[in-house]
Length: 559
Image 1 (cartoon, rainbow, N blue to C red):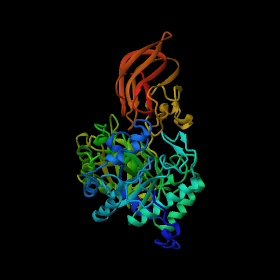
Image 2: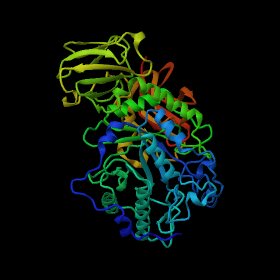
Image 3: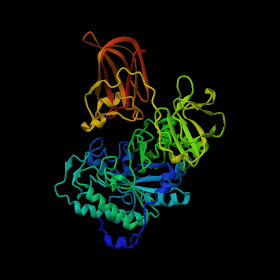
Image 4: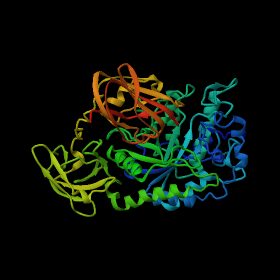
C-alpha cells in the first residue's frame, strides 16, 4: 500500500473556508435529472457490485478480478454523450464501492484501476469530459471498505470482523483519498456517500468528515449518507440533501432530495438484465420533480466499458420527451399539487405544469381549487386543454384522443406566483377495496420496522409499502376481512420493484385454502380477475422472488 500524504498538506492545496460560503444547491434543484454509473471489475462476472463479494463470487476471486479488467472500449465522451442525449444535467460515478477498488490513480493504495490492464484513470477522464460537455460532475464514495485491512467489518455483507482493524487509521485513509479526488478531478460539484450504516461509522465521524470536506471545498454538495442514518437524515447536520433509494421521495420543499433508481434491476451490469420501460422512467422523473426532488437514474456499463445500446436508447427516449416537455421539469419547483396516483405538478413563476398519469374512468379530472385564478390552460406545445372552476374544484378537461398514454402535460397560467401557494393534496377517490384498514399479517417485515408492516399494503396509499428483508425469496401476506365477503378481483401493485416471479392468491372457503388466481409476474398494478369467492381470509403467497418482495398496494374487490 502506498503512503498517505499528510492531510494538512493536502488541505493547504485548497485554502481555508470563506465566511458565508454555503453549498451550491441552486444548480442541483434546477437540474432535476442526473446519471448514476456503477462500474468496476465486477462487471466481468455480471454480479452486483460490492455485495456479491463473498456471496455470488468467492472473496479471493472477486478481489483478483481487476487483473482481468481491460475496459478496452471505455470512452468517457460516449458516457457523457448518453447523459446529454437523455436530458441529464449531471453525472455521478462510483469512484470506490464497498469492495474497496478505486477507479482512479490513487497515491494511497495499489488496489486501483492503474494496477489493472486497463491503466486508465476513469475518474479523471470522466471529470474532464463532463467539463468539456457542460455536465456537472459528482463522485460516489463508499465509507465502508470490506477489503481494507483497517476497516473493522468484512464480506459478505459486513457480517465478519477483522482481527486487527484500526478505524482511526482507516478514517485518515478516507480523508486522504477524498482530498486527492477533489484536487485531481476539479471541479467536483457533488460527493455521494454510501456505506454509512455499519457500526464502525458514527454520527460524530460523519460530522467530522463533513466539516473536513467543507473546509476543502465550501460550495461542495454532500448527501445525507455522510452521517450514519439509513436513508433519510435524522438530523439537520447530516449532509445537504436526502437520498431515498429505489423509490420516489415524499413531497418536501424544505430539504432537497434525490431518488436514486436503477434503469435495470442491478446497479452493476448484468447480462440480459430487465430494464424499465419508457413509461416507468417518465413516471419516476415527473413524480420526483413534482415532489420537489431529483431523479438519479443508474446504468451499469459492460466489462469493456460501453453503455449497452438498449440502455442508451431507452435514455434517449426520455431525452426526446424532455426535448418537448423539459420546460415543465428543469428549473421548476414541486407543487402546488402534491403528487399522487393522478399524477404530479411543478411550477415556475405564474405557470403551473400538470403531469396527468391517471384520468378518471369518466368525466374530467377534478383538482382542488387554487387561491389564484387560472387565466389560461393548454396542452404543453399544442393547445387543446381547458380548465373550469366549479363549486367542487377545478375540472381539467382534455379530449381522450389528445391525451398522452403515459403522461399528459398541461400548462396553467395563474394570476400570480404559483410557488407562493400552499401545497394541496389531491383527494384520492376511494378504491372500494374490501381489504382497506383490515387486519393483516405477513411472514416477514423488513428489519421488523413498523413503517414496512403488512398493513401498509392495505391503506390505499401508493407511497407506503410492505417490504421484506433482503435475500427473501418466498413470503406471504394475509388479510382478515373480519367476516365472509364476496371477492372477485384483486389489484396488486409492486410499483417499480418488479421482484415477484411466481405467486398464488388463495382464499379460505369452508375452512380450506383454495387457489383463486396464480401467475408469474405482478409488477405495477396487476389486476387479477377470478370466479367470485365468499371468503373471510385471503392470502397472497409469493413462491419465488428475485429479491425481498415489496408491495405498495393490495386491493380486494367484490366486482
